[in-house]
Length: 277
Image (cartoon, rainbow, N blue to C red; front, side):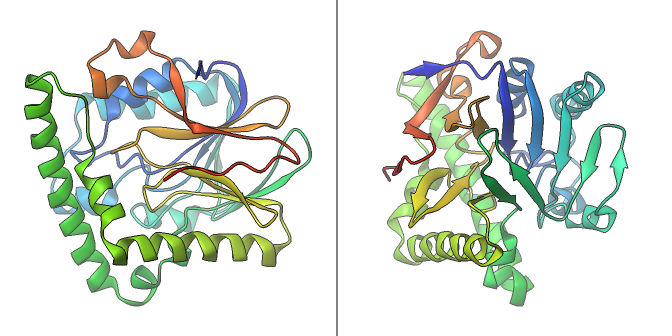
């Protein structure tokens, strides 16, 4: 089943990591250029200030992504930027608006059907980042090495005519500690939503896209634009969908590509949707 993202009420994207070599800016541009939405939520780690502080990397495509977002804001889309841990310096502008672009530490979004969703990046749930910054930086370095290996591997697979395969994602899911961390992160996110008295939560941070109902709380993770190239969309009826933009994996023309549902994940009022691992 395929669906074009044009003409939706809201779009949530996170972990673009512009300024980092692993960012799939070309795929993201294709997605943004196909998009018509009333609300565009940038759910943290949009510009990777941490990576830029180590080395300067800002190719033309990364600048074009920023230009595309600002163009949508000028054309009337309400852009809500919720900084993450990689662009946390911008959190000091909480509550500021620059034209039609707003910056918030977190945000409460009300869907078309009246559901209240708490929007935040998600590093608030990460004990390693909150308590052990040196450990967090070590984890970032290891992850960057894995992603470099992932790119080299898939260049070889592409030359052999084989489809894209995410070594990084496979590694995360096969390591018990990483799997436990993802489970704990999701549990903390759901409990935070429950404590805040909202119907659900939208976050990013862990580069693991998901959309499901957990004991009456909607858990949405918009994934990332380094590996999964995924987003969460809200239709004009309030239905939430988790979609991916796969053109970069198959060498297709991005501008003409369509999005696809991840694991058929569609949430509607009163419906429980589980994402398959």
